[in-house]
Length: 257
Image (tube, rainbow, N blue to C red; front, top):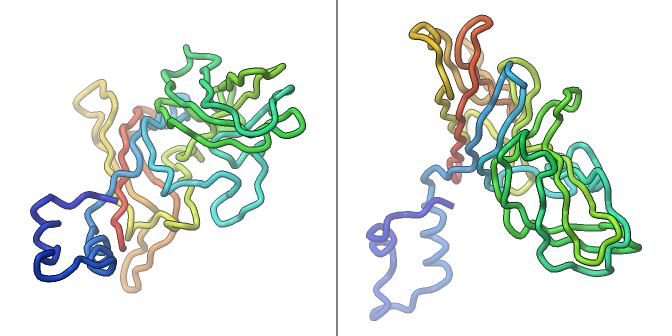
């Protein structure tokens, strides 16, 4: 959640010399914390490579492990997963491992680094995992492309062969100017009402390149009966015609909206 300035928090607290501060007092302060929370920052390549680089994302607002939106029961190897295990390894020791380094197999393709995780071994393979350090800078791409996402290797002590991961990301290229946004049941879908997008072109080659810029979640129909549609779809574009450029995009969630 977004943090309130210290003076605002103190102004809402009861005087502890006159009244013992209760759980309900704290709860009432938390529910007023409606400042936007940064939930994502990344780079969208649009036509050039059609890939997304997730520099940062808040996991509380995106797809949970084993879920695809509202649907649970997804395997670790399912393509819907942010961290899709392409190999569960072999000779994985039973039980939870110590935090494991995760290597980027093809570091020339992206600058992704810093991910560490623990894995749970059962029957010699990975049965579960837990992210310890999220890292950032990992690239995802369309499943049909030659580079569908960074390949990662989990270094598990005592394993015969290391498990591998395909990074599928939390923002995913659909087609020109459209990106799918994963979500979870705890904080709900991304809409025009609760999510504020911001876009800055990553690189422009001339003064006319900014003729067509937009970044929005979903669509809003016109009068006389306006309605919102396209939840979890990010529409973003920088440039015009065939001159389209990569974009730096941040997403802010309005708490309580």
